[in-house]
Image 1 (cartoon, rainbow, N blue to C red):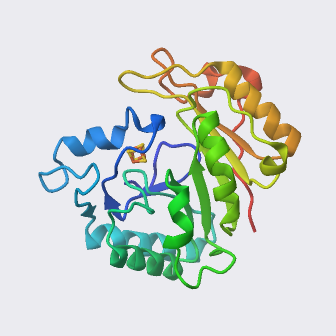
Image 2 (cartoon, helix red, strand yellow):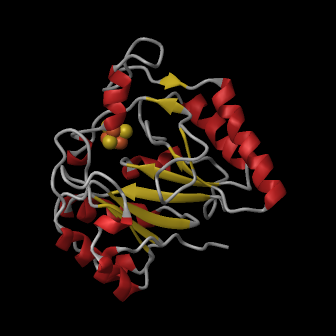
Length: 252
Ligand code: SF4
């Protein structure tokens, strides 16, 4: 959780709670699970089905209100990656926590919450009653890392109303083709390889292929990093020139 994160596609990271369960191949080397396993959140771990999650402190929630005040004063675009060490649409999360979370979102209209989820199938039944056509300050981003996940989840993502629908394709594990009729409805595609212990390789061609698809459809594309054992950093100079694309949607 940081006001200024090194993640290039956002400004801040924030977690209303900590904990999750693995949901697919993209979770195999989850860094958040490794962090949690160190017992830094209350001395116990918070991963797996049936395991209680850890709600973060009031001070941590209050800092979001402070960011909102600053953004209101300066008028700057302030995206917040929500949640990097949890999933908003996790079945294990008490409903009252989610209600508090939605209240915070409503109270902070000057921030843009980039909600990233691997549980897109849960979203429709976990939204607040006044969601309507989507809160204006929420971007809904589904993580999809294989073709099977794309086939299964893209329709679910697009069936939920949202200010912006996006994809986080990290760690990209294979070549993925997105049907053009679905791709043109997306507002953003983020692609990245895996880094860290045991990182699986992302072939550069897979990212280039997605870039071509996005260009054809006119969808903003953001290459976060190539990842892998020899390419851990997100430095642009390590990335082939044609892939040095870091677009962030302009949503008004
Ligand atoms: S959904 Fe995200 S936080 Fe949860 S286990 Fe998978 S990679 Fe980790």
